[in-house]
Image (cartoon, rainbow, N blue to C red; front, side, top):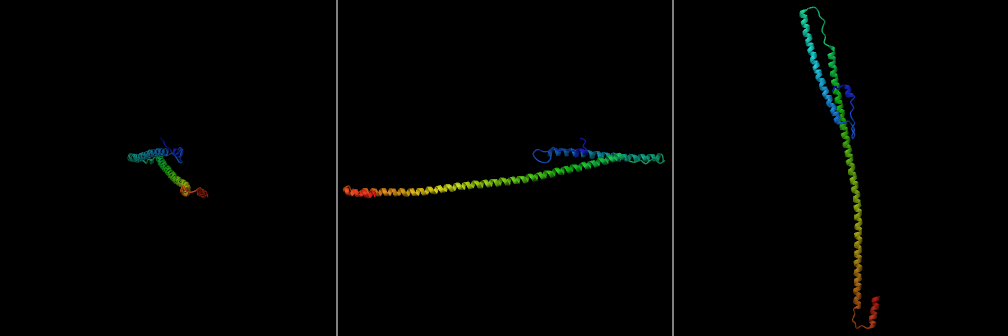
Length: 204
């Protein structure tokens, strides 16, 4: 892949569907490509420098030979300008690509940190809301249970009062019946008048 600065500048990453920022795998793959291309450019730069040094050494040796053979002044050999300029351009391009790759990496890391902080804050808010809702629900349930307990206690008190009154009425009724039996259970030799009086007294 022949990567150029324009390719890096114009690179468009696909937006993710469920979160903000760029797709991490896509950014990592692109950064890997940038690293490979930078290594290739650095290797080419090193080779070009080696060639330039070899060319300079050859020109020097050739100039010495010509001087010994013909002492006439010869034109001064100058180093090729274009290879040096090309090597310098490649070095600057490599440096620019490296800076751009670092900037993209820093931006990606910063976006990831911001997204992480946002998710953590959202998680804390959600947890607080869930806890508050659970506590409110618990309080409501406790209020309902307390009301039901109060109602049951009131019914139990009413039943106890009813039982006590019923026992008192039942005891009074039984005692009255026993008294009546005692009153009607006299000797059989009593006269009609006496029985009538007893009957009338019982009615009263």
